[in-house]
Length: 222
Ligand SMILES: [Fe+2]
Ligand SMILES: [Fe+2]
Image (cartoon, rainbow, N blue to C red):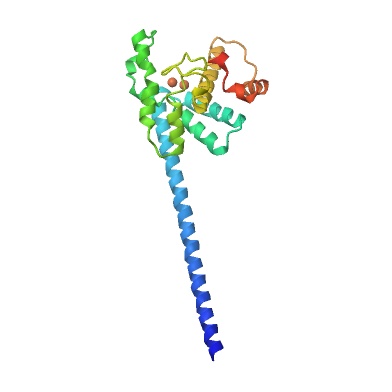
């Protein structure tokens, strides 16, 4: 009699456990779904921020996309992990977001800028930092590092703060390198010098020639 009772109790507990297990599995699925939705929404918001940059300064988006890809390429080459590469890819796409605060008359002036006007243009680094500051999103925090440092130079002659060497965050150095490298490639093309390899091949050759640490220093190109 006692044994039957104990068996029934055990059976009940087993059923309870199975039910609790089912509830937990459902809850875990819901949480995974919610996390994926949140990540998707975060990605979507960042892409729209990138579109803001493109609308202001880069109608086709070509420059932003290329800087972003090259920065990711360099980051990968020097052995940063997948999350860091992703953050740099998105952060580099936002490097010039601060240009939104520069008057069009100055930003798109066809003639040479006066010294005062150039001082104003330089402020896009600081404006970008302000726009991106105090975010809890890791990718935006990387962008916040890049925006104020992508015009700093290894030799300390950049702006806005004249930082030099490793006092410039690695993310800023990577973005500056991608930006300057592409500008060089573009000006070579503009003067119609024969470039008989693709940009990726140039970048690969370039990185194979130089030890990884030097790629991000590259003082000769900055
Ligand atoms: Fe810039
Ligand atoms: Fe740029």
